[in-house]
Image (cartoon, rainbow, N blue to C red; front, side, top):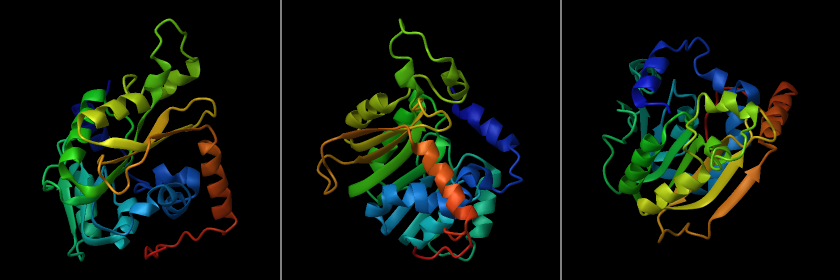
Length: 262
């Protein structure tokens, strides 16, 4: 299981030479990743008055979130370097705050004040205790009709039955993900914190048959977005990335730095 200190140490030592673009490389760039895999999943909640991003990195996704933010964009990260880079990138923005976090809370964010809590990739390696802490914080800060979109581990689903031999291909994913976290555990955590998972999409990252990650969309039970839970198994997600990269290469997706309303 990955502790907060483990991630802080590793990200402080991480080589950010590609300035965050390594995460979006499989799509052909951040803009392609946003248009293909992020916006279609959170677009219903945008634009928003106040957005919080957990694990902002160097702010590549934050640039486009900024365009969809009316009043305030709060960027959180556990490393000084990332916060400094984001503070520099948004130094002329009066609606952006960049805060170093303790890796398990939304410190500096007021109760019932947020329309969207967003995290892409940065929580896949967090352990169950940390996920529980973040779900508790989401329950604290979300407005009545606010939502959270969290990208987290799903490898736990392959370790539920101790009598079943685990596919060896999962080991590489499990090395960087908590085997106690999956869609079901996050759904239970949501229930504990006055939230419901209206949609959970279990996705393949590199191996088609292994749904190692999950996108969970959470809202309050009495939210206007509330609906019966939807669980989706999407083994084709890795192809979604490949096709996006191909379209970018063919110049069918713009990859410039014009981060306006798309």
